[in-house]
Length: 171
Length: 119
Image (tube, rainbow over all chains, first blue to last red; front, side):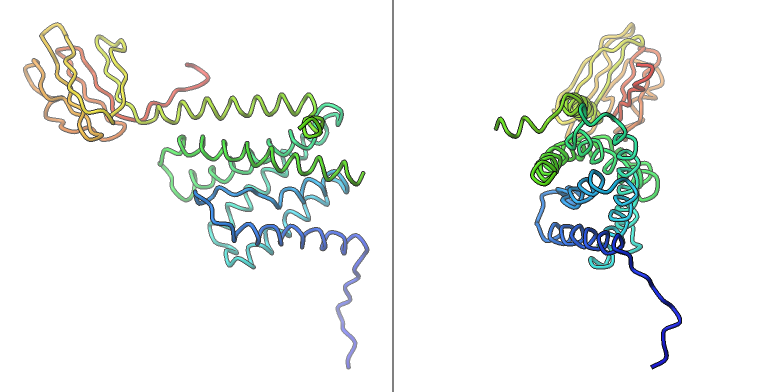
């Protein structure tokens, strides 16, 4: 056999990121199977992985895991490059930006719960922003925004508590 | 329960509170999106929902302007003004305004958007 001309060297960190991203993709897929009252209201369980990675391995790793999760999740769910995917990407990028800012705050004051709630807000805010600018311009989304932000508050709190617990268990 | 509360730090409480307040405020504004606003002489006379069927007589300098709200729609049923412009406008679309100028009454349907910086 001719030796491959392309040699991909896989570092230990690559493997770790891939494993974590796989966990996040798993959660995304499991979540897609749960029937939910409103389309678009999801618990966002994959954000638990993103947050744990952020605390453990830093922001760059969190960006990798999050983007890999969005692309792989989109491929698996068949939404890759559809409007759903664009919304997911916009939400993911917005929450990563918020996390980049918030993680600089002193750990003593702000923990995973605060980060989780604000990241969830950024996520849904960016998604509705995409809807308002691109998908349904001119529609009054304000009543929807309240519903979605309410859901984001709840899921952000729940996910944040899970993250705090996970970090506490395995310091 | 106590274990769970111990996971929250000061900043977390503040952020949760602020975020919750934002949701509540938006909730109120959101439900205020579907409104009927009646003004007399430029001042707010009545703000109500288009969901309750009713007729409202708004007294002006010429007499009563009668506003009809039925099945989520709003129109000026009768007006003492000479040209009947606001009556002929018929049922108002969301965001539309009917102005009965001679009687100094205006009826606005729908989207009330407060400018949170200037309001």
